[in-house]
Amino acid sequence: MKRILAIALFAALAWTVHVTGAKAADISGAGATFPYPIYAKWAAAYKNQTGIGLNYQSIGSGGGIKQIKAKTVTFGASDQPLKPEDLDASGLTQFPMIMGGTVLVVNLQGVKPGELVLDGKTIASIFLGDITQWDDPKIKALNPNSKLPNKAIAVVHRSDGSGTTFLFTNYLSKESDDWKSKVGSNTAVEWPVGIGAKGNEGVANMAKQTDGSIGYVEYAYAKQNNLIYTRLQNKAGQIVEPGLSSFGAAAAGADWAGAKDFYVILTDQPAPAAWPIVGASFIIVYKQPSDPAALETALKFFDWAYKNGKDMATQLEYVPMPDSVVQMIQKSWADNIKGSSGALWQ
Image (cartoon, rainbow, N blue to C red):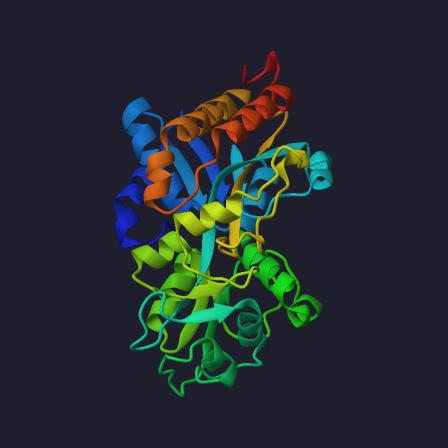
């Protein structure tokens, strides 16, 4: 079976998720590493209440999309929503499960969490290889009171197909014309410089072990690995701290009602308090599943998580889906997901 994230806080939860996979009644899914910490926490609580476990392979959004299309799992998970035409072509539907933020993390001796400030153009120049030293004038201009070392920057990025990479590169494409033209935005890109690592956990571990490094991870991984995260200057020109408040300010800009198949991207929102790299993580399932009973079981789990998992989500700095959006999602289940005897959700 796929390896489970090697993060200390989640070790017990990961074991719970992993060992339940052999039972026929359990739910199978694969994909994004971004939401894994909260999926593990929900799975442990749901298992205690219902006896039904979750076998979730944290393999990256690209892998999750491949596995659901291959029908080897009941659901796929991706932080890059599929476009409506792609969903239709494959007989799939999607819905957002949770929202959260991606942060930049650094490994610089003497720098504290939230002390360093970066902006989109400077980050793009670092990941393009144009800025190579921590005491570069552009970084110093954003941090006039910090003592930045004359040290080489070690870029760390994802090596696998990743929704976190999609969110990060989508943000950079909005902030930097050079990045947009030379690299672009996708779950996997041709990185100009840097070291690749698999999963949010891989980037977190590599950044922690590499002196002078900078990487990007989902915020829960930064917190639980005690990584030094940066603040960011957002689209409104404000310097913001990562966390529920700034993630929620970005999420508030989502127009879920006006989006076909919930296709919404939340990066670089204009709100003054918004964290600039925020996104939703999506669940992808078949409209006419080959195993309706398995998907019905999964939908009950998702319903439970929406209703009972909000406090668990906020404890890990995720933004729960608003009740009004959950109602839209459940209507989409009733309208779109069918078994042999009709709708799987009433």
